[in-house]
Structures are given as C-alpha cells and as structure tokens.
Image (cartoon, rainbow, N blue to C red):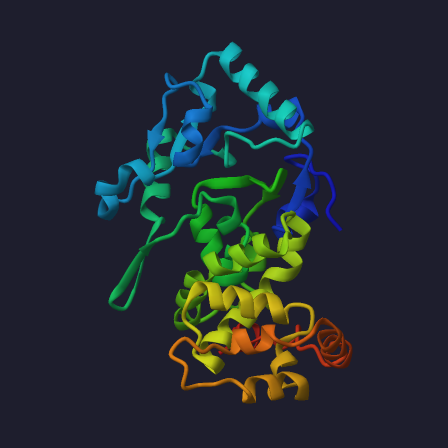
Length: 314
C-alpha cells in the first residue's frame, strides 16, 4: 500500500496527490529546496544556519514557538551535503530527525516565508488559533480534516511537501487542478471543530502506541469520530476523558457504547458524584466482557459512516 517514491515517481501519483513513503537517498534530497524546522528541533542543528522564522503577524509575541524555514540551496555545498548525510543516517538508525519537512518550491525564501506565516493563523467566527501545520502529525491529517481544495491552498507555491512522521518520510503533493474540480470541500462549520480535535486524535494514537504512518492513516478518522461522539453524545470535555473514550471504542466501532454490556455499565454510574464519568463506568467492564462487545459489534462497525465524512457533501 505504501511504496517508495522518487520526487517524480509517476504521473499518476502526481495527479492524485496520494501520499507515499520515501527512503531517503541523495538524489531525492538534492531536489529539495527548503527545510522546515519546528522550534523544538532548532537546537539539533548548527546555530549559525540562516534560519527564517515563520511567524504570523498576529502571533509576533510568540516568535519563540514558531517554526523556521531554511533555504537549502543557499547553504555551502559541504554544509548541505553533511546535513543530507545526517538525515540518511538518522533514518537508517530510526532516530529523530532535526527537520520536520522538506519542500520543493519554485519561489524565493521571502515569498515562501510570507505564505507559510500567513496560513498558520486561522479564524472562524469569533475564534482564532495557530495551525501547527509544520508539525508532521498535523500536516498528514489536514486532507481528511480540511479537504483537498483547502490543502491545495496551503501548498501555495510548494509543489511537494515531504514530512518526517514517526521516523518515516512521507511525500505529499496537492491534487492536480483537474482533480480538484471533482472533489467536495467540508463546510467550514465542520472543519473548525475538526481542527480543534486533531491534538486529541494524535494523543490517542500515541496512547495506543500507533506511531507509524500506516497506522495513523488507517485509524485517525475513526478516532476523530469517536472523539466527536464523546463530545456530542456524552458531553465529555476533558482531553483525558475523550482520549480514554476513543481508545475504548477504537476496536469496536462507533456503536460500542450501545451494546447491552456497555449500556448496563453506564446505567450503573452514580451521576451524583461530581467527577462521575462514563469513562470510569466503561473502564469497570472486565476484559472478557470487552471481548464479547468487540466480537458482537465488529460486524456492525460504522467506520464507513463517520459523522464528518457523511456530512462532507452538504
């Protein structure tokens, strides 16, 4: 399902925008124009590199938290090659990368930094927030959350955006203009709350130990639907409760809390207790009964009928 890719691997992949994993090779790295670095990664790189902060004007006071761009082609060749060799070695050793993303783009650093600074600040009605799109865990979920057209806008002048996710390099491209004409965009009223849930979904993936690109791709949509269900159906609000609820339901599907065993556990909850939570009640269910729930709900899993997906065409 996940094949190794070259920057120009196939016309079909370029047109579809389908992500694919990449084993780093010097030929691939030499094609990259820019590197993006998270603030917490900066200390992993030489301090004298010409970093360019990517700071939305609305978040100027938080410059220390903002990501940075690095024009790789502006570096001395020896410095650039040493960096590329380090990236290859780190991938071989399954160690953390000092770079979050590598970009192919036909623009100068000034144009790139303005674009990437502007798109990090998001508004919806009276709300606003920082979109941490340089974080690979966020970037890889954006097509699901925002839709292909909005993601194409985020690409802007970038033709290819490769991220280091859980040790794997994943190559992403925008859909071709022809394909963008055929896709629907989720309503903004759905996109904004889905953006707010991404952090909880990523924490749930970490809690479950699903720290690989295939697992994140396969499970994030159902986890998001479970988080949404915990909020809307059970009025759960604390992140820890939502993560626990999603992790309980992930092996059974959205209908897990409608099983008679789960309903009985929830019915026995003492709601007079100020900190009473259905998560506590569900956690009291013995392992052997969870196996029954999983077996009897597995055939009824609604993974293809998720709320966000079902509403995308509205």
